[in-house]
Length: 315
Ligand SMILES: Cc1cc2nc3c(=O)[nH]c(=O)nc-3n(C[C@H](O)[C@H](O)[C@H](O)COP(=O)(O)O)c2cc1C
Figure (cartoon, rainbow, N blue to C red):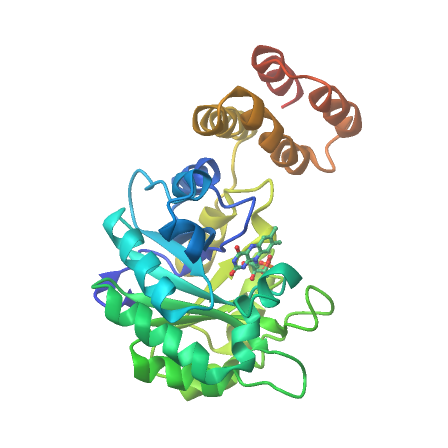
């Protein structure tokens, strides 16, 4: 698949996820060769005001392609933020028009933009004109069941220069309830010529195949399905494109978890690195024998060496 002139090696992508798809996690996921990884959503105003925490969030990944997702409701600020991301080394800018969170939509950003097509278009134009790299767009089906305007917005976006569109098959009002409507995404696919990515509730090879066949999408984006299993990207792309059966060895799994922990400590420092890694350890250990006891011990430790030994013993 191509995004503009950029050639991707796989059509399985890591979703942008605030609090999850940070630098330490992206570095781990990249070991399993996803087609593309997306940063967490970056608030455009905080970025142009050079907020220290926000600048840390856009740290350039070590290799391969890197997409930074920006959010906001002011076309000028969004354009400036996009330019900054390009200067920081992003290969692609993604515009967030899918975030359903109240704090974001109350500021008329995220999925609220789907209710104001003219403002949405003006943001797209400003970002596309500000940078020389490809710009992509992520949105939902629409605001609610009465306003399913993703196909219309996709067409407008393509005309304005957007190079790829991801659709999470829910409305904003659904938040995360119900099921992602993969079949609806076919309407978006029919409306445009640029690649369309299906997103929402894809956690296994069989779901990937069903989502792809119902949506006719060019690729898939995986978010929560990668919790505690960053190797899912290799499993999915090898099974899907090469009919191979990749299975991770448990000794390698342990090495990956330790490396992820070390990435987290290096990126955030000891205190925040340990705190932010606890949720990942919860996901890595989910449904394994004695995982409750393991999590309890991890959550009570603030010592990096002790946590390392606990990981080595448990996995
Ligand atoms: C913890 C969390 C954080 C998220 N943050 C973002 C974000 O920053 N930007 C965005 O476009 N979508 C965000 N999303 C939505 C995901 O990218 C994705 O569209 C959604 O989770 C559905 O895909 P999934 O079922 O594969 O998780 C987030 C989702 C979760 C669960």
